[in-house]
View 1 (cartoon, one colour):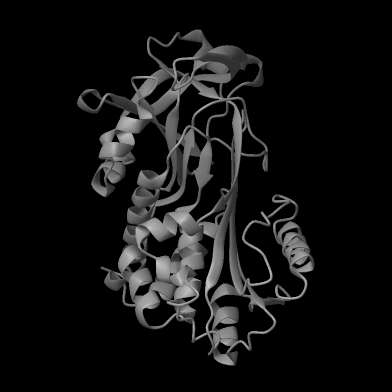
View 2: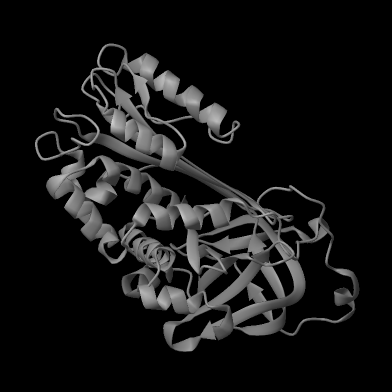
Length: 374
């Protein structure tokens, strides 16, 4: 297995573990890949048991050079002409920590930036404002805020990572077909929301024994990236899907070769989800508690004295609109002659569903999300 293949396997396994840890009925979107790059950066600075636990939980042991594999994967994904995928990572470190020059140099080479030095100890409010300004500038205003919850006078290290996708559908949803429709919540309550509609040929799969259906909605002319909508038969079916979800299942469900090209009428909610997610509790439950412990952490590759992460913050936004996530190129209304022929099959996403954005070439999960309510 090459480093690239090992990184993809690690990322996709990590996606499944994150999906299992998601609880509640809130809309959520996260980028396992962007989190993986942030944790790989933390792993560079860790030693001893914390480093071992990161490698074990993320299954880094299967990759001889995780950073080389990630660099290769990210260059493939972020240099596409079909879409824009923007991933940023930054370590904010208190100025009382004399950061190792070796780590700073390695971080600059691999992450294209040295850690940012701030004054958490004496001026936590100013440090937070500095982080927010960095975020706004680095993401060109896509993300406007970071929670202050993890920042105080004792904070030594905060990791911030972001992911944002700009892409157009291969076959866009005509604006005039977007209508208000009823959406059934997991509680069986109903609310009105805008559902987009398009008629065309899409890859579809129905898995009766799992009580779910899947549709592939590709992006761009070359279809190198796709959103897979996993729709349970029941309005409260997400819980059952996640109870039984596995790495093998998710890979199989998002395999275009296992789907059937079908002429179909598709209804999809028009939505935008913005997540500002603290990963501390989830990663703690996954077995990475030592990274966040002021007594057990060992970040001596960054700073010789006791250094631990206060939090790892994942900021992600995902949009499903008529043209895609955001209009970045000219698109056509792929309606034309298709309106002449009426579809006999409907794929109507009118209750909670899971979605995966997958890179087709490398079979890598880039985003994972759950849409639960308008």
